[in-house]
Length: 453
Image: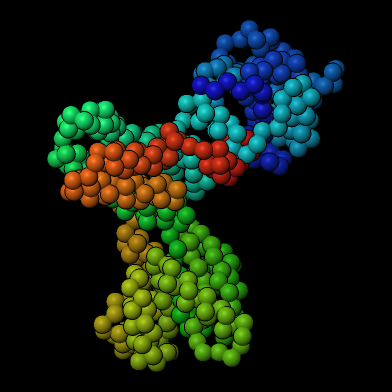
């Protein structure tokens, strides 16, 4: 445990006026500083995890009536003394209380500094600390469950088990180096090879989970595409149930991508309305078409719209071009209220859904098709899923180091080379949980946190 010499203070709830605000202090003098501005019980004589009513005062001037919560070290989020002052949510009150705390010896906390202290004091490992930020940023059931699973140590426990097994073999090989002149083996090479195959299988599964984890964390990108005036913007507005995009009968109204999000079955989807695909001499519109094609290539799902008044062969050509992208897509015929009976069979080789975006017909069927196509509705977020690019890169480096060990095991190579590659793999695994770290890495991670966390 690292004992900080100073006490930090920050607003722990979102800024702006509200019903209440929580101001957090952490550090050796958190209780003492609070007592200097608090009139009520003697906080130094109170037990941990208790709440006390009183007033915050600047001299004799009452600033606010408050509740003070005490968390005495090491039984707190940071494992330091922590005080949380619940005030009314006035901007003036918040600023005044923080200034008073600073005047009496605290300093303003930096972004993520409370969680950094929790990490440095062994309350959380680095992957759990990063999961705290993911939990705060989660806006769907799936991303919330994934962050909770990681914050509660599921990922860390799995990595620690892998490290422990590798450490055993590393120590055996190091022992061989001490008896190099006697040509003895303490580490069974066949057992080591079997272990690395097992570890690589786990690592491969973790690496493979990143694509799903990244989608759950950032939302499933769904591109709404089609030629001009087929109802793309109307569909976006209908899905979101708000006038998000401008709708017009004039071709080329949408000249850039418009994005917004919605939750389906606990999963966040990012719907992207795009410029109509057509040949155009308008420079701005042409740029919009280019962006549409770029977005389609990066999408997890494409909803391709067409209407019954379009030429049958033209529609088939469009859908074939979308199919060639090898990305899941939904063929969607809009303006179904205008479809005649013979037009319903115009695309025999393509399964398509008929809707009327304007009349809001067929929308629930479309939502079901979206969930089925992306195949995330039944995703088990109780398992370990990698969603952090830093973790992915460390796992890939670990895999490369272990593969070098496997290659060297098939050659008469010296034990010190094996030991070096095993140490390298341990180093990369340790980077994920923070067993191995640097000041630059910590600064890069925690400066992305909000102030107060």
